[in-house]
Image (tube, rainbow over all chains, first blue to last red; front, top):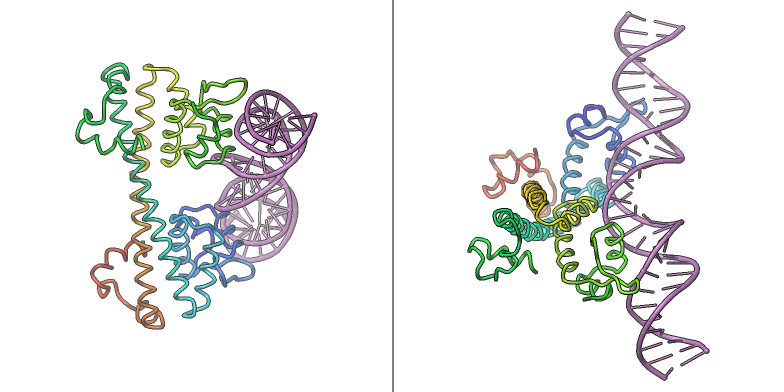
Length: 145
Length: 145
DNA sequence: GTAACACCTAAACCTGACTTTAGGTCAAGC
DNA sequence: GCTTGACCTAAAGTCAGGTTTAGGTGTTAC
């Protein structure tokens, strides 16, 4: 059993955030001893899942829904599986988007390296796609889509 | 030259967002004809960069900084390069984080698939890491870090 | 001439996720 | 017995990134 202060330190989260999560219903059925929150392994595991679901783009109220499902036992396995499945697809899509962003950033880095070497953007702006260095050509589309 | 309505359609953005960006200084020196915004190729390219920098996690006021630099010519090439370089690193780091999230999500999908097949979580919760299926073992760490 | 459109502004409003504030309880140490 | 430290609550405040509202202009279509 951990105090709120210990958990805050373990997860590098402010205490106020843990209290906020509790108020929003993210720790259903958490124990208290004379008013003081007691975090068990269950809440620690919940917090790991919260961080994961948050990182996957879920909102607090959707995470609350998930936490409620965990209190309902086997009856909600398929809903819970579905939530993770949907998140998995969302994160895969997000990574694909980030890859495009990364391609554009890499193109821009090359662009400014070249502009700095030239002292101006004249040569480079006039450059046709098929005159670009081979390793840059596939980045060009990201930057001009 | 495009009207705000045309640009909104091209980028699938609400008109109000384009006006907001303009108010925040993201289109420095944009032309107007009797009060009406005229988006040239310069603003279209700016908008592409805005979307990229936004996707990379930059705030509006930092994007504004970048747009101001573009009006200052060759003198700011190194600052601009530095901004893209920093963003590139940030996005690479973010993708690494997302990969961990994805591993956990995949582990959880497998977990619930197994729980659904078993009808309960008993067998699976008692399972030691080295009894997990080989393709799941490396996901386990993400879920229990 | 008037209705419909596409544009304009300033200012108020909204949302999510926290954080801060103000005031209170309780146990331990001096 | 009183201060310190860790906990508690409810309510208000904050911030980013827009969106909505209310009122106005200018051009074209009937």
